Amino acid sequence: MSPPPTVDPSSGIVALFGPGALLLAQSSRGDGRHLVVRAHAKGGATGRYHVFKLFGRKRSLLRESLRDFGQRVLVGKTGVRAERRARVEQEILELWRREGFDVPRVEEGVALPPGVAPPVVVMEFVSGRQLDQVIADPGVALAEKERLLEGLGREWARRHERAKELREPKLIQVHASLDHVIHHTGHDSGRGERLVTFDFEVAWTRRHPIARLAKWELDREDESLQRCAPPPQLAALRAALDRGYSGRG
Image 1 (cartoon, rainbow, N blue to C red):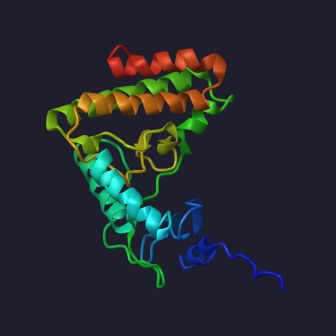
Image 2 (image 1 turned 90 degrees about the horizontal axis):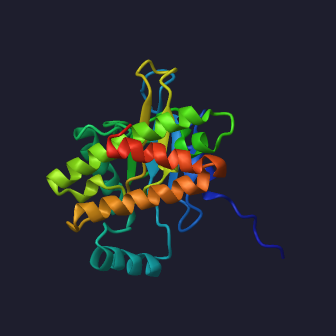
Image 3 (image 1 turned 90 degrees about the vertical axis):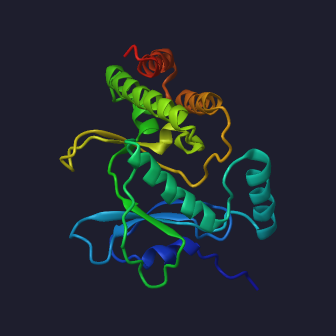
């Protein structure tokens, strides 16, 4: 007898959000419930999308327990259980916005569709391209890429200084990468251009020397830049990022 067909668990979950719902991201590991969905919120303004980030288990129960212990006790990060990751995501989004750094706005009071259970964080939908895609695009002029990276470098420097002032490790992004920044041109919103950072489900907890954590974040971003930059442009793009970060841009 042939095995039963495998059903992608995300298909049924996304369908619960109704017409126009779009799966933006999904973890291939665990219980299949760790999803990011763009959908209309029930009762929301016509044509307005929200992002629903559903938090599920990414590993077996045993591996999750071991990793949760290791991150909290040995590494100095928040835990990996779904409820904890959702709580951390919302806390950091609110912290960064409060301190003046551009992240998706948390949407309060949005009803979840029947059949969609917490933990879920609901955010504003920010249209645009991930910055790594912009940097990799041969159709985007080098000068435009340099301009964007200079601006991003200035924002990193401002945020790192604020993290040092507050001795706040949560202002340093654990999952730092250019594919976790959205370039919103502002053409469809009237709000102007934005560089919006996302993905905050894990955070630093120990008050390590902030300068060390900031250096760690910059190293992760440089690795990201190396992966996406056209090789002939890499040196110029690194220089643009450095000009912004050092205040020379």
